[in-house]
Each structure stands twice: as structure tokens, then as C-alpha cells.
Image 1 (cartoon, helix red, strand yellow):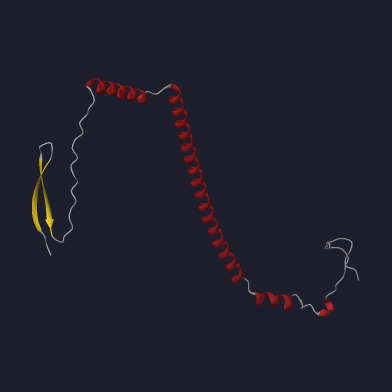
Image 2: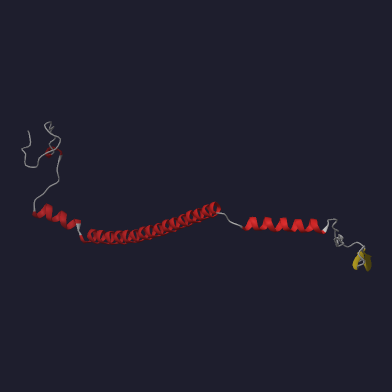
Length: 168
């Protein structure tokens, strides 16, 4: 249910009149802040002048920079600039290395693809049946049997020389 709208005049001590509106009913009311009257100072003019001089003196002190403060501030700014420069150099170096790695990976993938293509080409160009026929029919080679394999122990050294005589 809607409420009824009304207006109310409020009179303050200073003599000003302010009109506020409000709604009666079941709607939500808007809260109006109360006007706070201005404080009157009980200080004398001399006290006010002294306070103003003190405030001005404090402002001058706050704004004045002495030599140690300026030196510390300068050192802090220089350190900050050095750190920023170092950070940017490091970022640039990392970017360059990452680009180099990406370039090398691309090159590696290209070489692998070429290698696989060449290996496939070699494997398809060799006819194993032809090699078997030439070895058996033309060269007289035969498969090794159990009686043609000789096992022997060589204790003198760990490897076998190609032209050394095989022990019986």
C-alpha cells in the first residue's frame, strides 16, 4: 500500500528553515542527516593568531628538506632505478633465450621430419627379397647351423682382434 506524501518545515537555531519531505505508510523511509549547528569559538583573537603562526611554522618545517633526508631520498631513488634497470635487462635476456630455444626446437623438429623422411625412403628402396636371393643364389651363402657356430673363451684380453687366429 502506498503511503501519503507530506512536507514538514524544520527551523534551526540559526534562523534557517529547511523543508523535508517524508512518506507515511508501509514504504521504506529515507533517512535525512540532521544538521549540526556550527561551533562557536571561545578563543581570543590573540590565541587564534598564535595558533595560526604555529600552524604556518609547522607547515614550513614539514615542507623543508634537510641534507640527510635529501641524501637518503636520492640513494633510495638510485637504488630503485638500478633494480628496475636490472629487472628489465633480465627480462630481455630471458625473452631472447626463450626465442632462441623456440628457434632451436623448430629447427630440431624440421631435422627430425627430414630424418624420418630419409629413413622411410631408404627402407622402401631396399628390397630384402632381392638381397636374400643374391646372397644365397649368386654368392653361395647359407644360414648358419648349430654345427657351424664355435664358442671359445678368450682370457688374454677383453676384445677380439679381427685378424687373429681363432683357437680350436
